[in-house]
Length: 295
Ligand code: BT5
Image (tube, rainbow, N blue to C red; front, side, top):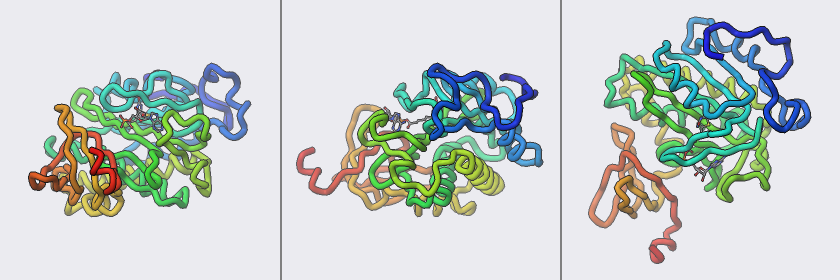
């Protein structure tokens, strides 16, 4: 669906055609999202969200919204299954149909200096960690910059991409993924962590409401992470701070040290052997102190 109009859907029916693998109703543990109800509940109230578009299958929700980057902000694209889900640095995001939440949002914070736009994926991480912690009854933390963790396991990933003069931010969050479906052994899901619910509807509603609230506060503060409260919320949710880390930097260099702070630009400050270094991009691995000797 590419326009602002919505095809009529009967109530309580799954959206779109079922993905390969059969009827969306065959797996009662994984009921489909109700796109029309979600759209009705979350749009049209003068708020941020303009359209919640739930489709049964697509390549990548980030790619779908990048193709619509010229439109006003506030588009939400949700897919029950992605055949070409993207991670950062050309990596893949993989998950079976309806096993999680896979969505992207189109944002364009014109009041905020572009130099501060790097906070956007961190802001989405804060909203996702806070809403998921609350609805699931679990302690969901952030690994810098924006992986959602339960303990040391990855529950969700976030991918922000510039698109036209806006930003598309995508989130993949594992909900009912079973142990034998984990794409990597370090992943987890809400179901595996004994969440009080695995109903994706309240999880998605809470996520979009919290995201709207944080985005509005940050934008109204002109992108100032400190006065909007975003810096302290991020710091409070961040499991990386105080940890020994190994950072794989984009140029191929590796930095080892202790993560001590998040600076005003959202970079993580790592105290290594050559003093503090602010890192704006890279892959962080949390290590145990004893692992240092092997590195
Ligand atoms: C991310 O990348 O974690 C960002 C993932 C963003 C996915 C969403 S889904 C909706 C939207 N549309 C898209 O096309 N993408 C976004 P990165 O930090 O590079 O991590 C990718 C790595 O996570 C992979 O190389 C795997 O090791 C691992 N991985 C893949 N699928 C996973 C899953 N379901 N759960 C946990 N880890 C996973």
